[in-house]
Image 1: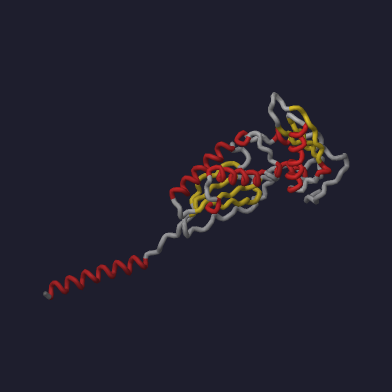
Image 2 (image 1 turned 45 degrees about the vertical axis):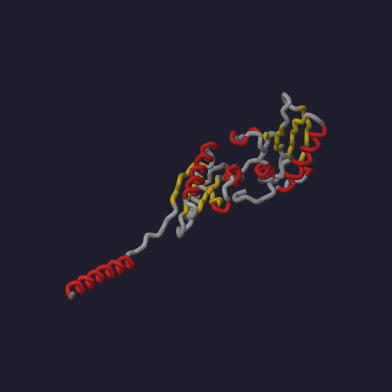
Length: 247
């Protein structure tokens, strides 16, 4: 009987010692996992959406985790990071994914800017944003001296035909108050008037007043309606409407 009691006491001591050891063992702090980093400027939208889908799949497999997307900016064009952010949100909407599970932030300007896709487990800190690295990836701001077709110069094969009105407005207001010329290819006068009203209202939301816009109607090309967004030069000698360092 005494042997049995001694055995039980020894066994309890081992169990208690194990519990104490387990309590004393430091717990590993969870960390955010970088899924991939792709170029903000040079990546294709197909590739960005594939990486986005990878992140959404991992989030679907781990309902307790959060997604975190950091979009580092380039100096020119100034609207690109915001455009990439909007693109990511549209993709989540298309996938009907819960927006509250993914945080999208715009980081500072970098010489070689990337878009970082992160998986953040419970208890982990969000990735720390990089500071501006001092590299300016654009030359000095120059006036537009020739008419510029924004629609052609900023194509996006993933969203072909979609108008990036906020980006167009940003470039229209970047430094000078450029006049805009909007060409509407419409089948009928009524269709032209309707599109003109819609575009005028949308651009006004982004601080481009109607007085700066000239609308031109052209017949639909092979039955296809469409829009071209043009930026016209300002008068020579016009000063920028914002102060830039070194100017």
